[in-house]
Length: 168
Length: 204
Image (cartoon, rainbow over all chains, first blue to last red; front, side, top):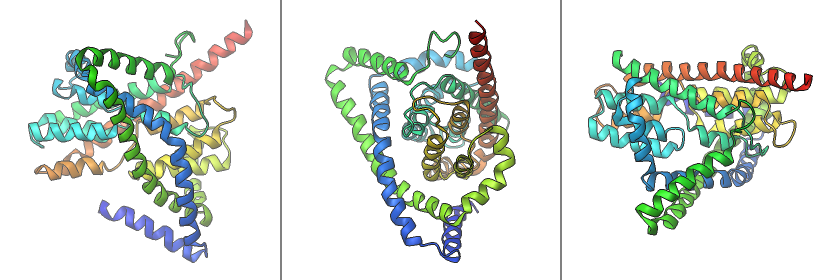
């Protein structure tokens, strides 16, 4: 069912534009033009985060920190095997998917650990990436409570995810 | 941190601390890898940016069509009762962008979400460099992403030969709604606390 969702939305948009006599061609020209300028304003933010994430992972710091965190996380019902995933989720979408693939390959797709990992990866968003990119046009630097609140809320979601995987 | 105004949660501090710590680690573990790793980071960013350019070109065209036909206004009118309650006192244009952003986020159309969210943020911005409570609320909702179909994850599980790849669908939906709900409540509480503190400061 869900495979049809996006093509149907695209089709509906285009048909509706044709009916309303809006030039679809001009819309695509504008879209492509705007995409370039949008990407130009996002690029610095993405570059900075990626340097940071790459260093964080390659230096082995992420493995060390997740080692420290695995013990307290166990009390909250998060298996220690996925503590690095929990750490990586707010930082990097691609990193999360790569790590999820490793976990699924190692423990088998239907194991409790892999199901937990899949639910966590599916239920969360890269908080730091979103915070940096969304404000790229209005250049906000001070985000006050936004990041702690987002991180805490997604962490609550992850704890819920692990608890749900136990019963569902 | 937002309490006391002493420790300001600031992108600069978060990134400097993380990068600095990683670099210290790197210097001891693999000093020759430090520079190549940073360059790999930027290379990855460029690869992603190229992909994003393509994705945004398509989705921005669709958004343009929605704007030109007034479809975004219709969507926004349908979502208005909910959105108006969460984001008080914004302009019509902002409500349009917010509704496109939230609708595409829920449907898992990541490519449409980001441009709509950036436009929404820009249109809500009153003073350069300052984030209003509504902007932070939108950020929190997006950062805890309500997603109805975790398509990538299900595809990965299916590829690995899962007996029932889509079985994570319900736990994911509950977990993400839980995260978004908690995030929204906390954002409201923090905004109220911030306002109360400012009022106290004014009285002094």
